Image (cartoon, rainbow, N blue to C red):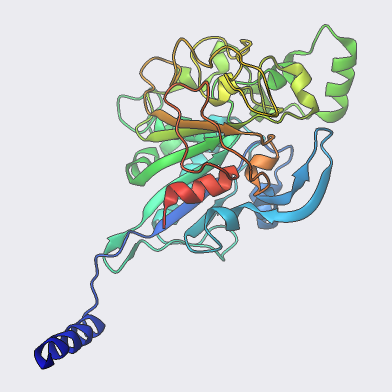
Length: 354
């Protein structure tokens, strides 16, 4: 008995004096926002933070309820590190990619973000940091361009001298939500107009045409897939299905801005009337499966698109910790979900792990 007690005490003392260094790698979540109608996210860090914070938005675009912090939800209230990227999202996704990649490089160097308050360690006790990019809306198209132009054989390798190759080599994976990977009909309407005079009046009153919107059109010559190779890192695809009023412009299921066809990077026409195959208490119908021709990715070789699932979040709520109901994989070939219930940002936290 004395020998056992002595061995126990010796072990405790040894562990206390010489702790094991094999701890899990620290996680750094890098947040890339979507399209903006002004350049505030370039010069005002508060605008970058505010993008991920807000109240629930109803179908009319009105906010209500408590303020929710999406970054806090994704990082488990600071358990994981966070780095917020701000860039000119009124410009094209390829110009945005240059600035975003430079800021991601800052994160990987252990430097603070533009607010000066958030940074990620390069390593912790010998364990290198794992970098996970969380991109909403246009931010996901920006990441497509970076990941798909990171080797010399890419069509726009390191565009304008940007460090696409360096940051891609250190990214573990990217999570996109509500991203118009193959464009959105909303951008088409804003830039091209409509035969419907009322829609044209509403578009003129509430929209802001710019290069960012121009390059989110569904016309083939605007789609990012024509300016990149297959992404070198896994892109996990998510979207919502609780559309706002703007979904009158879209066909099929959508979050109010991005249809499920474009959010899941389906092959073929981004404006196709694709619907999620689902049967729930709230939506008691059974429709055609999504992406029936190519379940994971446009351009054939895009097999790095995976982990697809959706929830009843609209486009605005996806970037906040709003919806906490069921996450679905029905009608999504190869779809999977880390959480049974939760917001997209809680799904981010689940993917990042403990």
